[in-house]
Image (cartoon, rainbow, N blue to C red; front, side, top):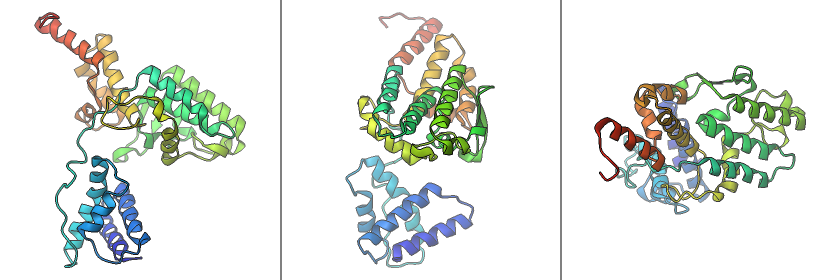
Amino acid sequence: MNKISSLVESYLSYKQNLGFQLRSEAICLRAFARYTEEFGYAGTLTRKIVFQWCERDNPSLMTKGRRFEPIAGLARYVNAFDPKSETLPKLPYGNPHKRVTPHIYTLNETLLLMDKCKSLYSPDGIRALTMQTVIGLLWATGLRTSELVKLTKDDINLDKNLIIVRKSKFNKDRIIPIAEDVSWHLKYYRAQVSRISDKANRSAEFFFSTGGRPTNLRALEYAFQKIRDVVDVSDSGYDHARLYDFRHTFATRTIKRWYDQGEDVNAKLYLLATYMGHAHPDETYWYLSSTPELMRLASSKYELTYGGDDNE
């Protein structure tokens, strides 16, 4: 263990003893520490080593900023007792949490991705079937991918069309209703996987990979990388399709459907916030995107209320 690794572990222990969980920060900081160990770096925290880590592999500006953010907290801690450590500049890569335009998937794009899953390497068929089902469920529910991979068989009541999301963000549980056709597809998935793998049949988890092994977030992301290029996301702020954009898509589709049905969207927004696991409706606004269809509906509502015509 080099000096950076020792500093990282000391910092994490200090913050966690204060009550901070620092789960994602710990992953990033330990990856940074391993990076310094790999080429034998024995010094303390300096700007050079930090920027070298943040800029490796020439990532996007946002990725650089998100790599830098947890190290900035580490630096403030280290600066308090290590005179050889260097102070770091504030936001050298800009705000890493500014909203980048997501891609809103169409139904055809979603079906195209699901069909592309058939091309995944899947010796027993489970991996391909899981990715198809995962994409369909994300489209239908807007679940966080981290919530989806933790689902167990006991969490999904297919007779009552309900999913229990346990200990999600802010350590809260919630129950969400699903459509009957979604339940049908989940029943089909479970039956197929149980037929293929006795190991999966005896396991408590709901989603599996090859050989009946429970799947995880990394496995889903890796599989999605293999199929995502079939979708053009040039309208977004990203250079590739993302699983997380299905959450943005679900929120935007729901608002459009309510407009189509003549619902009072402002009055019902709290329902969407609750369904998506948000503590306040203003958090839900983050996921809404102004698609052309949604803007046309909003404009029509405005004209009905305040007047106007197509030429104004």
